[in-house]
Amino acid sequence: MGLLDGIAGPRDLRRLDDAELADLATEIRERIVSAVAAHSGHLGPNLGVVELTLALHRVFDSPRDRILFDTGHQAYVHKMVTGRAAGFDRLRQEGGLSGYPSRAESDHDTIENSHASTALSYADGLAKAYALRGEDRHVVAVVGDGALTGGMAWEALNTIAAGTDRPLVVVVNDNGRSYAPTVGALARRLAATRTNPGYERVLSTVKNRLPQVKVLGPPAYDALHAVKRGLKDALAPQGLFEDLGLKYLGPFDGHDRQVLETALAQAKRFGAPVLVHVITEKGHGYARAVADQTDQMHQSGPFDLDTGESLSAPTTTWTQVFRDEVVVIAAERDDVVGITAAMVHSTGLDAFADKFPDRVYDVGIAEQHAVTSAAGLALGGLHPIVAVYSTFLNRAFDQTLLDVALHGCAVTLVLDRAGVTGNDGPSHNGVWDLSVLGIVPGMRVAAPRDGARLRELLREAVAVDDGPTAVRFPTGAVLPDLDARDTVDGCDVMVRLSPRTGTNDARVLIVAVGAMVPVAVAAAGLLADSGGAGPAVTVVDPRWALPVPAAVVDFARSHGLVVTIEDSGRVGGFGAAVTAALADAGVETPVQVHAVPQEFLAVGKRAAVLERIGLTPHAVAAAVRARLDPTR
Ligand SMILES: Cc1ncc(C[n+]2csc(CCOP(=O)(O)OP(=O)(O)O)c2C)c(N)n1
Figure 1 (tube, protein in one colour):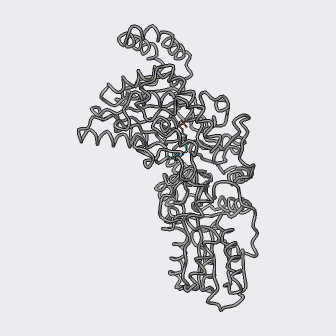
Figure 2 (cartoon, protein in one colour; figure 1 turned 135 degrees about the vertical axis):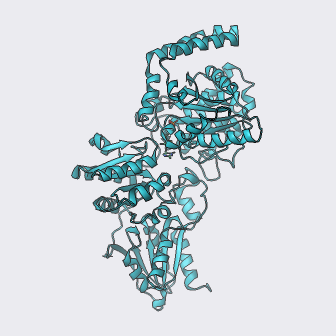
Figure 3 (cartoon, protein in one colour; figure 1 turned 90 degrees about the vertical axis):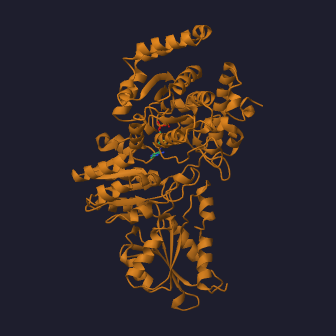
């Protein structure tokens, strides 16, 4: 049994001496690496915060004091030292440990949403609440240099820095990277500190003196600290924060736990808002992660512990299809440009950026700015493609509605990870985009069912020059190409089955969105197989799901039941839009909607979640049979 298994909570950390804590850090790193190798997860970010998290939990008294992790992808160490180390056997598995903080798991987890740049706002609110209620509790927000590029972080700093009587500790975990190196003027300012040789000298001087200073006691340490501060005053970015009125401490070596504890204790005593600047290395202690030039193993699939080889089956993903096609389009059209919010590789814009570096913009973790900046690019005569994960589009709703659509800007949103995403937990599912985009006037949303359609619809989207378009597709392996029988007014007819028995009342029209088309085709097969008594089924893929094509309304006129299938929320989604379109056209055919229920979906593999919520051929066929013959 190692040290980690004896840690039931943060108090146990305070019993350990320096040597034991160093051993514990090694053990924690081994446990993180083996858990991610087995189950996938965030590797580099967690390896980088081992000493920082140990220091935080030794200095602050969680859960009475609140330690908030921005984004939450770097909370594995926090989980391990708050009694959840054993759970890493089932990291990110259904019923197992969540990959993000989870309020259901522990009192030590206060926030859990996984979208970046929110922690400072939560911290501001908590600090105000404790002040008003007269509770003497500390609030600490740990935010990465990447998350600090999000506008919300600065909105919060604007308030926090002005609340001079309210204690609040902001720890900036500066590793110089989001996934890729962090971009922009702020990153440049922070990087100047990190890469300045003067700063390195200061750090090593302090480190070398530490044993002597410890013998002499805290006053000597404070004196040394003052010297260190004096030395690096010229180097550090405190001006940036202190000009706002925010006390700045740092920069500190984020892998020197003792130095961190001293700094955090000082911040805790300060009694007003203070920012502690900590420099860490993403992937620290695991050479493969440190050496990974793309993203230092920010997030990894399962891999072989000995060889480091990926254990994921080699497949072509939806992202790769987009990645390849967008480069071809960019080569043909020099007005096409790309925008990413700090995810150039994960969204597949990297090949475009490599080939045309001047035409792809990384704007930091700033989806709102990305979308309005795209409007500006469109107003300036270009056709921007904003590539984001579907879930992060939520951030930029108002920008899409008013800055893009109201202005009639021809901007194409490419929404990767649309639909159920699975193991990343509730907040990462892309199940809101159809509802969000459905209420944007002039917005056209395409949903490819396979790779061929993705290429085709992407081209159609960038050919639209009088308003916004979106192309949404799911996570994972691209589905095999599925050709249509014929096309009616832009809608692909996938299946036309003749009735074995029955009348026209038993004619069923299934209209499915994108990756749900194969589910519809399979459901049609099951219905046709109903022991000779099956209905006649037509399956249609509208390709452009929103606004609902007129052809779908026309098909509905000649059927007794319309069934819609989508992997997006049922409120305000595709089924709701079809229902409204039929009502508007005076078509009385009833509509049965199969969509994601209005709930936050618990962690699970995509297929398992789809099964649980009934988005499978069997569940759809059963529901249709029950509808056609309620006595069954
Ligand atoms: C609003 C939003 N956009 C994009 C992401 C995807 N994302 C997850 S972590 C990350 C990088 C975070 O960088 P940083 O805050 O510096 O933390 P690090 O991983 O470097 O420790 C990004 C872009 C997100 N979580 N939230």
